[in-house]
Image (cartoon, rainbow, N blue to C red):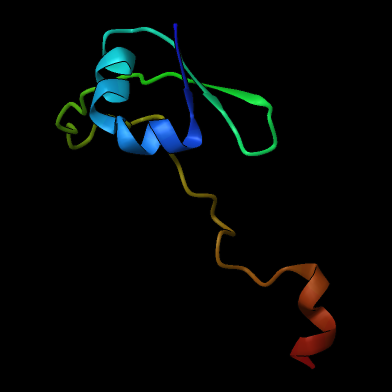
Length: 76
């Protein structure tokens, strides 16, 4: 774990990123003297979507576009 102040975090951003990318926690001491822990995680790789993959799992009700009873006063 590496600790930085806000000023040193700004000045040593590349070093801080290298520590975080290596899976280490980075602690920044804020201007309010509290410690904040940062950790980077890689985002999951998006797989290409397969058309039709939800076929048979999704359906639309017969009355999907019917007016809702709550709006009856506005329909008159």
